[in-house]
Image (cartoon, rainbow, N blue to C red; front, side, top):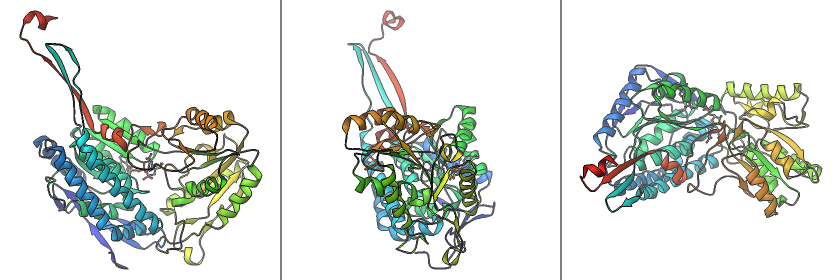
Length: 495
Ligand code: NAD
């Protein structure tokens, strides 16, 4: 476990070896205290090219892609077990770099272990089909790994989001180059260190390079030797990646931003709907792509619901993620905190009613950290920036609605389409709203997916493609058609 004051330094992992970079180092600081936590390589172009070449050689040699599925499954299962066994030191490092409460960090790592285990099983279920036209014509429709994949990951849930990519990529037989986010490079490389000890993964299949997105990330996206980019991050970066990848028609998967609606009808179970509406935004200080950042409450219960909501929000315990009592940690960085505060200012300027919070916490234990109070606005107009933009902080817009049609109309009034929650006991109402909202996921009387068996991804500007489930595996496979004619008659060939 990282001891207090210890600052670990991480090299790149390329071709089965830890390789120093000549590009210097990038620092990762604890957002709760400002203390230096880790340093990681500020990779150069040559480092990235080296990692891509190793991944390319490994893939083209077939050392992994042509292994039997059960051998790839075994390696993935071992990675999952190693993660479960080495959970605590990684969870501590995750909290130190990211700021999230330690219990949430443990939960994230268990989720990642579960995803790797799921893809160990899925590796053995890649199946093709054999359409048959006549006694002499057979088609084989087969699936092959897509090739060398760049896995570009954000900082908010760095290990579970990486597992969503790494699990299916390795299950499919691809070789990968991982590019973690700068803030969480240390925990990501520590995770790579752990799983790289698994036997049976040939050198070059698993590579990881750290450094800034606009140099290291874009180098990966531009390379002609990379077949696919699987990206999670902001819609703006996703759009840039799609543009760069278009030069050689590289396959892209984009998991981008969200502005999800949490819709509470008057017949909902309030005991469950209310805490969920609090935690779906304020958990991780709002730094979650699927945060319920727009709360829609039916007008018949609006007053009583919001009174209890305000009481619940006042009780949220804010603090350092290493304190077991903490329920909400800091914002990832000073820059991101300023961005969140500027959204709060814009909400006030545009005339929304600031009902709770709105301030930075900077006294006493909060002095060195980047803390913003849990904040919500009422009296919000749909044209306001706080309603339309992804703030990625602890800031919520609350709006009343009258009926199903109005709830659907408000929920859909955004360029995003990632997720959403509906709380009601009426099946016709649930079905009408679930089908009317244009998002990749709709949770009914719950928040978050029950497991990795189901797909996740966005409509509209929330992304392209799906992760998790068998859909997530399909994203790392190509489809090939082999057409067999079982006769050498020219007359038949001509037809
Ligand atoms: P970001 O877009 O700034 O960065 C994401 C990753 O892309 C980082 O590793 C970064 O270094 C890299 N990057 C940046 N510029 C790049 C470039 N030009 N070329 C290649 N790579 C580049 O996002 P972030 O601030 O790290 O994460 C927050 C965003 O991620 C939010 O918008 C959030 O909604 C989104 N997110 C989406 C999902 C999802 O599943 N849909 C999950 C988590 C987070």
